[in-house]
Length: 360
Image (tube, rainbow, N blue to C red):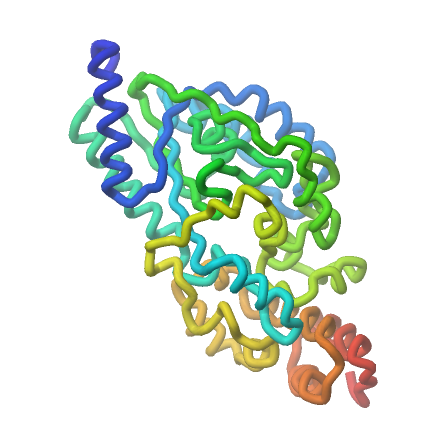
């Protein structure tokens, strides 16, 4: 039984797990205990303030999100892994963001959905652990259950939670995915990461909608990632202009973070852009019909928002583009067949383009 392993044997196993993780392509592996009492308190305060908006899943499951042993009985350790995903130099993505006729998509979503790749790698690590200690229980998670992955990763030494609420690493910045294995093996734990944000306020100052209301405090209801991905209905008008050309997510707080000058480009082909989503024009994407959208986003995280929200987001971005005949014509072509929600955003965009349609 794992309870009978000596301290030396547990240390050896922890080092072996980290070596396996490296061989499987993870950029870091850390181990922590299950005490998330501080994170639980912050979560309760955040939920009570309503900052989660329509993300009701954040309030479900009671305390299972912050108490790993309640989610998976017997859990005493969490193995946290990191995998880098930055697909291109940051100056390249900045050029797209600064071109109002191009569509900006958060860089994590340009390639194949990371969940499957990360889960397959983590499954292989889980199997190696299970084969070594068959009597142990090891359950993996990749954004698939109520898990506080960032506080766990911070405690496991993979980085610290920055003022923008993303995890940061001194040597790698913040462009990475996280995954976890909940284990019954009492492995030695790693030291938590130290915070190195200092007095920097760059992420708070750059946020287009001032969603980072204070250091380490995010109001998701204002966040462009929330507005373009999680929000099901109409985007509130006060935030539309600030969205610019961002049609799926927002990376501004990561782009401006000084620690991301150390970010490494990914070696994973699946994380690289598909279907020219890293450089397509707004008009090109807006003219996709639903069948094209489903075909082009097969195996992509983008598909989860569905065609209507895709069109909604693009309509707003076109409204923010410089007035032109081409933009106005693209909006008018979609107006008559649009759903009521999308039509609302097209009409807003046409007004921004100084066009009054003859029909609505």
